[in-house]
Image 1 (cartoon, rainbow, N blue to C red):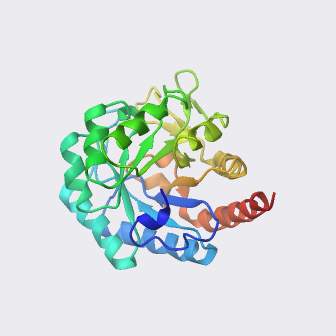
Image 2: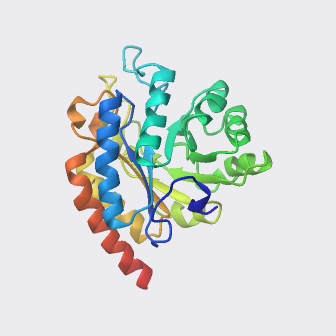
Image 3: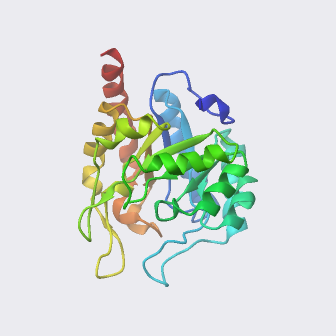
Length: 272
């Protein structure tokens, strides 16, 4: 599929990678609008196609006392406000079949979390909304096996599917990106590299996932060099105070420099 099929995508003829970025979770209207505005200024300057990302709820948490959201409808309305305010498309993840039709009323792309990408009913429900479906590769799955997840979307009458690599389990408490998977998955569908989640360190004794944000540029650069179609980066103006995934998020103040470097690399790759 072409990015132009998504409403309000800018810079879709720039030959840049596209960007899915925003906070892990919608914590409130003010923070969502502030983060979106800053990312849009950067992506417009660098001519990067951009989709604002924010989870309207967090269902996959290590502990029962972890933050799960501010309320489904409230968060979805904030995502719609971001879209209407800045004329930018939005993406959110869904966790239950009933989420698909509800979230589709508010956002442009539905994301299937990595833990749930083999849940046929969920994938089919997302596909039947007619929205773009972003399928995150399970940490436990091979790149080749994502063909079957994409086929579920296609067989449901929807040709608009992406694959996102968010790393593969490396032992019990670490993730690794196997860059051999990018060309494999790009033969199946447009492929995104989830830079920040692939740097998670899950299953910590504390019950709070750790991360390696110092490696964000290293992983992102490698993805661009290997012709990934899009990048997924969670960012926050104060990751230490973020209510979800703060340990692996990028501090928003570093985003412009990172993307500037990545765009420069992309230009070199495009010239080869």
